[in-house]
Image 1: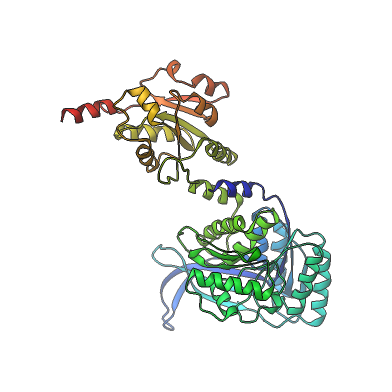
Image 2: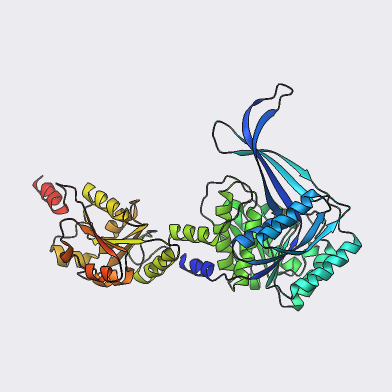
Length: 497
């Protein structure tokens, strides 16, 4: 069911998140990969656009701000133009960067990506150039950073560590941070580096390595979900974690959580354009969800959704709460009780909740109802016209006993499960709900549509629910009917044949 995730998104609030780690600048140079250079056998990129985004720990901060969090960022920059640019971007985003210190002995970390288009196809990254040093912080900066973090912990709801192995997340700094956070009752979630020694994360609340990182840290090659679950359990035990979460790209995430319980959380297939930033998104959403009081299961399921939306975009791109809600609403929960799962079929209470969420996004609701027993081209035309009256269409489907009472003992020809399945397959239909009453009046009260649709063979004063809908500012639309098509006539022809 997506209903619990929708409720979680709507109740994320504005947690105060402290992000600690390697601050970076991601620079993108876009252009057409038109030909091979005459100077050497290399691709020639005709650049036409240059873009800068915050990366690393500052990417996590950016993603959190887009999700509505209040963010404090701690890290280190060089005393250079790129460092000043990063500070200005953080200021523009409303990120508190008092904890971002300047080190005159190192450059600001910059990752410069060259992205080429060929014959109007989707752009692809063709080269990345890094400007960086991985030297650990000096003792003086490490002490100064520790003092800054001590002050910021007092204002935080949760701590996220974004470690890109650029020298900020030293063992001493992280050890002191974890101890201090525990003293304040704060969770510490860490996205670790690629390596075999994870001792510096010991005592964190949770760790979020990807498949490769978890394999290196445990000395294993993780080729299956079960191996990932075993690696998560091992990391949890070795590092004294509350939870270890191994991200598995298209296979979702593997969790070994509180009390050692292991569980796999799959994700649905996506069109993957760029995996850059997926790990940052997972860390940001997990932090937001846990700070809002979610358990690990709900937090991971939400992070799966957000991470999936992230990889559908190029580069490190933000995802908003509205985008997540639209994705959740588009997927729809599965409604049981009427045979095989149909993603558009909802019971009455869940439908009310879904429509409330849709209205919060500014969407308008059209409603129609019927038996839809033997579907024909007239039905298809009618439903398309109904859908065109608003942003989404709800179809009230008469139950089998209801059809029997209305049409007689030989109807319906198709049972409610089959009729719901056919409606479920139509693009014009967004939601289907089954009702048992002879009239849809009670259902109309529940749906409260902006537009009530019936066929043009009805007069306005014959439409059940018309007065109700118009009483709160809605309207009635009489949709045109395709001449020569009706279920009764179609059945008579079949009988004659």
